[in-house]
Length: 79
Image 1 (tube, rainbow, N blue to C red):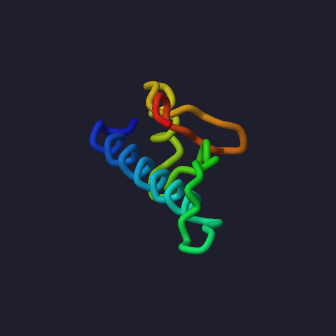
Image 2 (tube, helix red, strand yellow):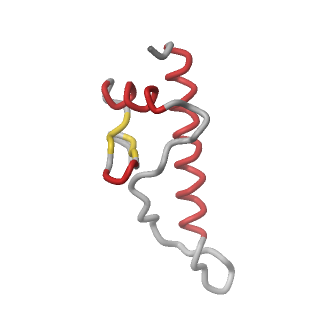
């Protein structure tokens, strides 16, 4: 069973990775000055590997994450 602190750290790491990947995706394909100006199409990501699978499953059970096909997870209620 994961502690509250572990769950909190895992969710924070997940959000950080998701933000980074979305920013990277939006900056890609960029025109003359490198700014794409388009919305990212990223819906789910693989969770950071430094946390065990049980932690991600617990976050799904608590309604913080949604399990997507092919081992991906997405945030619930956030774009």
